[in-house]
Structures are given as C-alpha cells and as structure tokens.
Length: 115
Image (cartoon, rainbow, N blue to C red; front, side, top):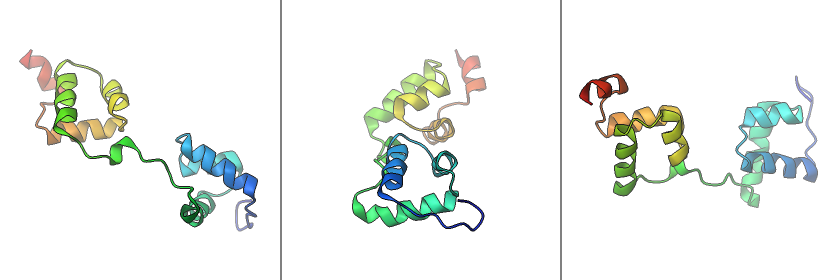
C-alpha cells in the first residue's frame, strides 16, 4: 500500500492504529507494521482525532512542578544515569539534558570533580 497506492481504512485498521499509538508506537513504527506510509498513518490519525482517538497525554507535556524539579536535582546529583531519570519522569534522554541545563545542574563530567 505504498508508493501512490491508496489505503482503504477499515474499522479494524483504525483499531490497530489507535491501539499501537496508545502502546507508544511512533507513526513510522505503525506504518511499518501495517505496511502503509507514515503520511497515511498521520493523515488517518488526524482524521480520527475528532472521534476520540487522541494520543494519551504524555508526561513530557505536563508542567514541571517545584517538587519534580527537586526530585530531578536530587537524582542528578546522586549520579543516577540519564536513562533512569528519563524513565522516572517519562521524558526522553535528550530532555534530561535540557532540564538539567535549565535547572543549572553542572555537566556530568564536571559533577564528578565536585564530589
């Protein structure tokens, strides 16, 4: 169903797309699994959005609270790996670095010399 071929969206395909989306799959991953283009998946999700098929809110879209910032700083200074911090807060590893920089945390290589 790629390269200009039209995708016929059925109720079953809609259920599969939304189930994969809610399991955290990206549009590219969904497209690969269903054998359609990424743009077909994105277009279908856009059309389904008004029918209650919205992506569940991710933690990265939530506002940071002072308590979350305090927990982040504690984990950072304790030397907890970025992957674990990312999993704890439900954010990407890259966002861990952005948050650390925003909060004024020293870079990891500099943190070792402070201890």
